[in-house]
Length: 264
Image 1 (tube, rainbow, N blue to C red):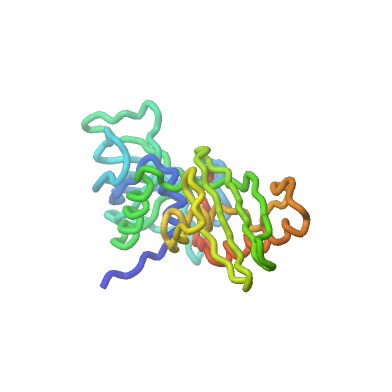
Image 2: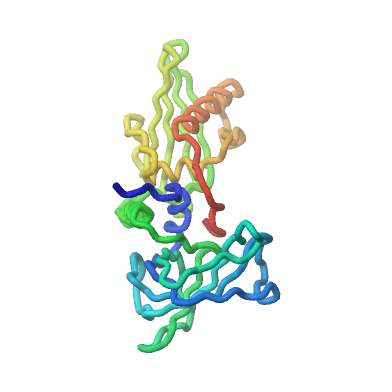
């Protein structure tokens, strides 16, 4: 039985959603750079110059040299020493091409990682999770990155205790995403997320560890910005905030073992 990936869904999605290239490679050589050669290096880390042999391009377009080089920042070990990068160690790289670095037949091509630490040790489970995320990303209508709450409202229902909250979200691409939370007279709630122009209160709740779940759980603000509910009475704003908290609770934590990359 294959061991699970040591990385969470969000760890991998943070990198996969912003990287034009994902590469399966094998370490050929590495060298630790001096601190004066490593601007912006965080405390407790060391910067490496790495050369690696490409095993396969998981995502991206060529040309790509058979051997590539890049810089990566890795934590120091328990003794405060730079970690060892073993020759032939397999890794996953999340990167961008370097402008003007088109490789020749026998040259080493340069890439730039999308985050200082965007090199993950390769294992079958991590690659499988990565491929599942990339498959979702390229589907038509793939859920876009959420950047905030645009506006919304809450309206009471016809029976005491009933109500409906609709929230419209800002996205990185401008594509519409909305949340609908319905409260029954007995106080029970059900909610749905719509990725598209049709607001469907009966849509399925996104399953955990899917792209839709990731966009919501990792992109929504932790509190509903009540100022976005213009024209809604104060009491109804409180109900909308309570409904929003139900959504966050249902989604659960966006668990990460690494920080999100710059630009993610």
